[in-house]
Length: 298
Image 1 (tube, helix red, strand yellow):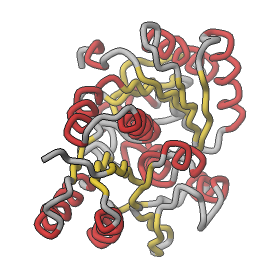
Image 2 (cartoon, rainbow, N blue to C red):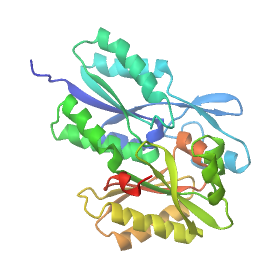
Image 3 (cartoon, rainbow, N blue to C red):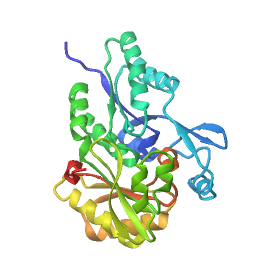
Image 4 (tube, rainbow, N blue to C red):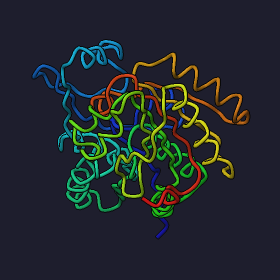
């Protein structure tokens, strides 16, 4: 029997996809939660509960924001909604090195597969976070729209996870270290006076510093050059510029990209509340599809 169900791509709050991008590519998402001053709220990518500046100013003022994985109830409601509508589901979740949400999604999916035996549910570890996870979800939507079956699409996305290139620079690795999102031993070289680390998502989905650059401007130039090398042979020239309330740096990056990679398509967005809580204010990142990240031999 030919499987003819439509396919719904679902990601989560770590993907940092704006409403515009989600609507453009027909992508839904499940929400994690933030905890600010003891109050738990859904981590909305549409900034319903606070503005990006309000959110990042909380951290600038020294208060730590914590997060939770996607609750089981959230998976249950979202998956059931699309299954009832006759869809197969491909959930592309935050790297398991950073969040347990994919495992929770699979627990929910296992139960729902018995209730909806004519539908398929895949829960895929993106090996990425931030807009890297978002880019992989966009990639999945493009494959879906090209006519791939659910099985073919899941296999394709799994094969392409390590072709997402993330180059991020932060003022300090302290926030990542405190959140347990980068090895504590790596925090040292990120805090040397004036030295800015360049961080990637490695082949196992970890946040890994790969080099250090002296000064903010040089670090921005470096991530542009790394991105240019990553997408040199790719037919997908979409570059997402993600920033943690650092719009001036994001604009500088856009101008650099327009000059260095004139055929690139750029899209700028905020780093959302989940990743923002871990990476801290003023981080900036370039994310694109290109060469396999195993080339860094980490």
